[in-house]
Length: 258
Ligand code: T3D
Image (spheres, protein in one colour):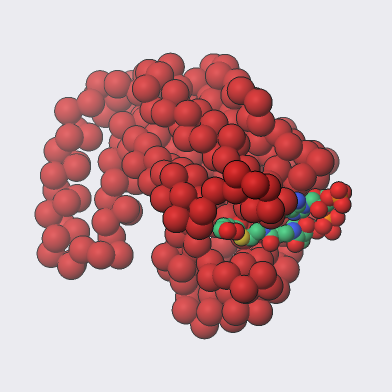
């Protein structure tokens, strides 16, 4: 691939955006490659946890604004329907945990791709910017869906309208981020988090994700019924049997993602 490095090792797929001189801004090629990476991760049974992160000092600065000036620039409809929306849909539908490891600035669509992931962790020097209003656009890539659910309507509304830069510590306090790791310990902590996820009961995590995907739109009764259905499926997995056996035998479980 031209703008993304994909590595698969010990059950962990690392998708590293690699346009560091543009702060990993998305052009068409990178957006399509991101979709391809997510498809590979979904199809490969060896992959049990996915990390999306960036090379260099940025996570992603969102849409490559220079691309919009090129003679063959994609239209707005193409950018959303063919570049960003399929990325968001793939992340939310992937039956495996997806972590955003926000290593630096995450702006525009870059921020919202991070925020749609199952777990968002950030380096201390990272930041988040809903940059859209500063160039006369509205937040896209699911921002108007995920951000108010993460931090509440008022903060989301203000951040989207004002385009303030939110540092990692503040983002953690607001609920945008699960944890912040000091810059010098970021990669090590990410590795540890990913190893934990890749050795957990993958199917149970996928069912958890499916339940959460529906929890803000379902009624209370519908959500109880969904939990019932998914729990029955979880109870049929080999990992559930292993979890119970290991507990009774007072040993560490060896989950296989089956
Ligand atoms: O049509 C549509 O646009 C629809 C799609 C919308 C989705 C979106 O994502 S809209 C939002 C697009 N993103 C932005 O507006 C963010 C633009 N970037 C910035 O505001 C700043 O770069 C940052 C706040 C993110 C970081 O600032 P700073 O000071 O740390 O870095 P910098 O010096 O501004 O950037 C470093 C280089 O990256 C620089 O290039 P240079 O001068 O060294 O050659 C800069 O031009 C380049 N860069 C940063 N962001 C983008 C970019 N190049 C192209 N597109 C970018 N988005």
